[in-house]
Length: 147
Image: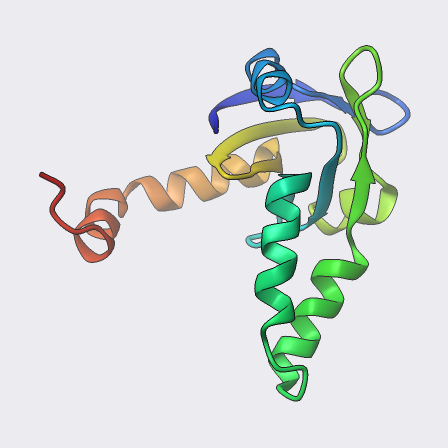
C-alpha cells in the first residue's frame, strides 16, 4: 500500500507534508484519518485508520497480566495521535513524538507496505548503512522460496 522513501522537512509548527505518492494511495483507499505513534528503532509509525484498528485488535488479544505487554501497550497507545491531513496535505507531529524520534527538522518518510515510518534523516542514514550490509543474510533467514 505505501512504498518508497522521500526526504522532507518539518515546518516551523512541526508539520510534515505527506508525499504525493502516499496522497494518491490515501485518496484511492478513502483514508480520512491517520494515526501516528512511537515506532521501533527510534522512528514513528503512521497507520491508516483501518490498519490502526487491526493493530489495536491484535494488542487487545494479548494478556495484560504480562508485564512486557502492559509496558509496550502503554508506550504504543499513549503516544498515539489521530491526524487528519489539512488542505496542503500536512499533519502535525506533536513535540513528544518528535522528541522520541530525535526529529528536529529534516526527515525521511518511508513506505513499509502497511504503514509509513517517519525518521530523523540522520537516524535513517545510520539504520540504512548498518542494515544494508546484512540485507541478503536477512532475506536468506526470513524469506522462503517464492515460486
